[in-house]
Length: 260
Image 1 (cartoon, rainbow, N blue to C red):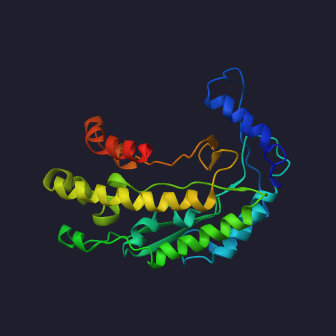
Image 2: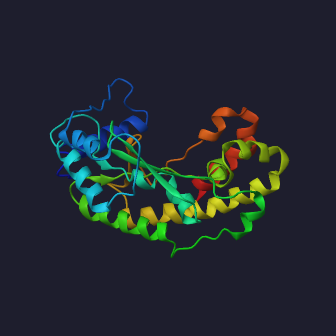
């Protein structure tokens, strides 16, 4: 039976969520509660609201431990899970040489990351390599291991977003040039999407190899917990396109990830 120090009713929550996802709980109400905590006030004083340097992983672990410990007796349908927000976007571009930038979010205690466009034009694409010795992959491993070690028996580590398909092309040439390239240089976009698949598989496989599953499922900042090994797919670039564009450029990458 699942036991977490920071969630006294964790086993009950997992059982309830299992019924929910199996469509067996249509007559029940599910809820998660937000509670104020001094850790968020301290975060705001420390980082402010805006760009900040890459934070020390030990400091981030300590923040999550303090924040999640306060939820131990909250009997809602949440699963306490630390989210490695520092790696949510910038890791992918950083892995191939991008300039990673960080932004503090006082409302939830996240420090998110992004990269400036890597390529000045598509002629530079062939220089990209997936390098396991890259600085940002090594930082990812160190932060992941620190979070997993701290979480053991107390809380979970949430899966985090994929940056594949057109999301990754955004990282390379920026959003506007991505949409232009779909029309003018679709063969290069396709090559970038294939490159992104391999990069995302490496990063996500590494997550599950080191973090493992929680009671046979995946801890999630989006849905709390869900049975099996689940990735957090993003289709944000298609919010500004037609359904036909998603069918042509979004569906196949998503299905490849899911098949893997």
